[in-house]
Image 1 (cartoon, rainbow, N blue to C red):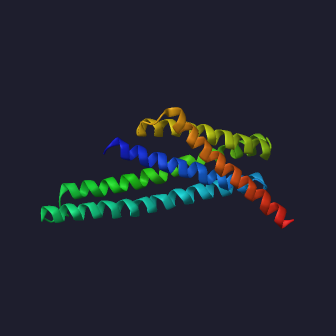
Image 2: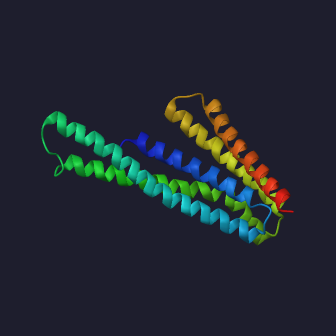
Image 3: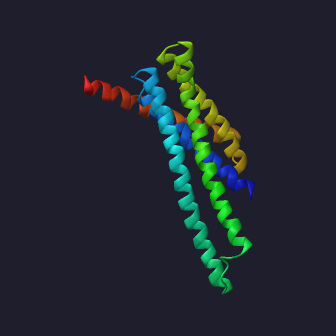
Length: 183
């Protein structure tokens, strides 16, 4: 299987997991640590499972469309061939990589809250560590993405960090806005 597809699925899934769960934990940061951790882990796993199903569906549709066009151009049925089985395998691998990398990415923003729960440091400290660790992981993913796309590594890395910052700012604003309105 071409490495580019595996890398693309991994990068997309990791970013999705890290950013969505960063939003969840920051949005829940007004709560108790166990609630924040449960929300983060639950959101990350649900997002990962959803991405497996979504990627399987989207990849299958795309591959089936291309396969039908190939059959039409060759005027032959290819469903019982090794080529078709390889295409189906590729679809499954892409879906699994997408979902697992989403779950992996979702661990990053939750981890500081888990550590805070067991070590005893504050929710505020966990928020700072969560945002920082997520930014660092996004910067590293940006470097991987820059290598894949042959983009300048620092620019690619900075774009990823800015995405994380945008999610963090919106999530904190929503959390504070909800708390303000509910008082």
